[in-house]
Image (tube, rainbow, N blue to C red; front, side, top):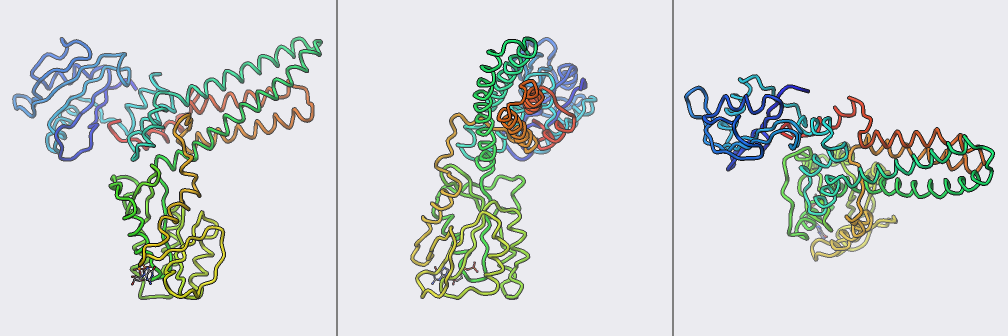
Length: 447
Ligand code: GDP
């Protein structure tokens, strides 16, 4: 942890500038070795104009920011070289730094250092990563809140309240003769536990929604050939003129198009494979549909209003039955031959452009998108943290059951302490290496 690390912090490609970041004890001294000016004499938090040199050869004309410990992102000495963008120059600068004996940073290592050095806590560290990956303004708003530590503060306050209850119980253990106090305390505990439970529930709900806000909803459009899948997909995209451009990332190869609905990104999963197999009707791709289903949060199963349910339709209905699903009965301009009932049905006709609005409304309704408020949005973003918070539910259940049975309140202390401990793990007051590795491996290298 004490060595000096470097990485390219901007996207490697053609651009006006690139930033190469260096952090650690030797940052200033090592960068100094490859410049024409004396960086060791520069004041902290200043920017200097300089050349980067490889022996006597000038590699680039740059601006160098010097930020001395401890007021930096990592809390270590940090140097940022703003060089001309472009792959060759940026890589050359990085290569010179590596030659100086500086180590290439691992993914997320700058943020990991910020965490380990106490500059930010775990939920803030995650917010850094989330912020980089947000695509919509709504997502940006909630993430920036977390970056300011609002969720951590919320959790810290809950822990303080738990400590108070635990203290209260200990008073009771020390002074058991005061029956009056005990009775009052049980009431108080009940009230406090109820309120803490509500707060935890709200963090759980928000955390589940945060995935929707930050990553969007992955939607698979499935159905037999010719039922109108492409037509519906095109209408959906046309409906919202603000198409979100595909940002290279994890979903790039599965997402065909994305668009915004109430500030939420809807990612239409590419089911091109299903169309490719159109000729072989028997194989319509139940297999392909299954693959798309696995990646989908929501399924739009398209059926033809003008035909009776076929064996394949039934098969698709079956494989999608456990998913969040909307059945879209298309071609309502043609004679009705289809008879189907389901709680989530929308009728469309892409020729006369009918039903698309209703389809979007249905999606919005299923996810309560209009109610997804970004104010007071406290959430955690990794599944590990969410699971930890969910596990506190069991402790709460045990406490409530105990209170009902009138068990001696000192028995509650174990569960209360466990909630306190688990919440501490969520914000990283106590953490394991494994948790850190899992978190930071999803970061970019220069972050
Ligand atoms: P896919 O194979 O499921 O993607 O279906 P397409 O979107 O390619 O549509 C198949 C055919 O059905 C095309 O000729 C479309 O013009 C037609 N079609 C799509 N939607 C409708 C509709 O609502 N009404 C009618 N009458 N035809 C439609």
